[in-house]
Image (cartoon, rainbow, N blue to C red):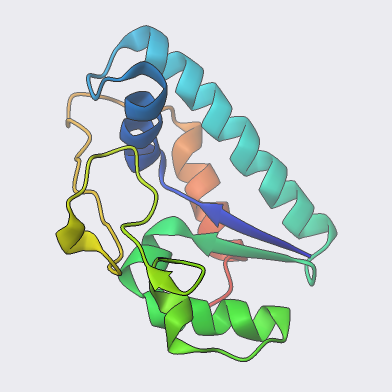
Amino acid sequence: ICLSPIRRFESFYFSYAKSRYKTTEIRQDIYDELWEHWRHKVIDYLLLKKKYPDKILIVRYEDLTNKTEVVMRKICNFLSIKYEKILSEPTIFGQKSIGNSSFKKTKKFKGKIYKTFSKFPSNIILPNEYKSIIKYVNKYKNLY
């Protein structure tokens, strides 16, 4: 059984570039590397989902952060475990935490889901393949 959170490339870029390269600037060398990383990882999960449809749950990262309780209930159902409200909050050993992020957060985020609002500049053109990949992510994600 595999839970596969898949994040849109636009937000993945900023998070990964910030944690790995300490920048949110869009640079071609970083862009190329991160595109290939994202692309291969997502395609691998999609292939696994196709081969083992009942064993892989594709969860869109953005759904997890925007519809947390609904998605967590779906995950619990998939794992055959009872949903509890605490599963919809960032915690460590049952204590509210500020969660994991490459971006600095204050204590006001304790127990809250952190959402990034970084937008990809409109002049950055994503590869044509991106639309097809996202289409498959949406197709294979289980409806919440």
